[in-house]
Image (cartoon, rainbow, N blue to C red):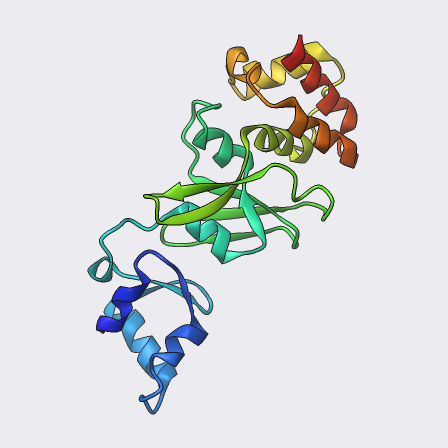
Length: 208
């Protein structure tokens, strides 16, 4: 179906797909047929991407993360790995959302979404480009680190020593990279009220 070429790596909805199938007596049957033939791949109920035959680029998991569940931005472990702050490759695309927390498993990878308040959510979000064509939302390095501290459970960071150990020993972030972070974004996170004491410890390590 040549019309599928227009989507490239962009996910599309069931509604958009049906608008292309108005001449079919049963659009739902046609969609099922397209899935069975491999022309389209279902990401979740009502959302699809085209197969390799209809695109010349690899599907972007970052782009999928924004579209599968939104509003959301990529953060936490995946963002820290994306920026090279942590050495390990992260296989689950981790995001922050204002909706309830949820996980999705797809044929491309797994996606995890953590809930944040409307006040905290918009701080430190930026855009990154894929081949200068498509943009996705991701936390700045500072916000990704704040998110990791804020949303990691059962971690007790009571002083600079414990914070330093968490950053260097647990996350394996090099101190020289931490020193380069923008404290303004961290201060904005502190002002919202999430784990203020812990984020203030982070500020001290960056400054001194």
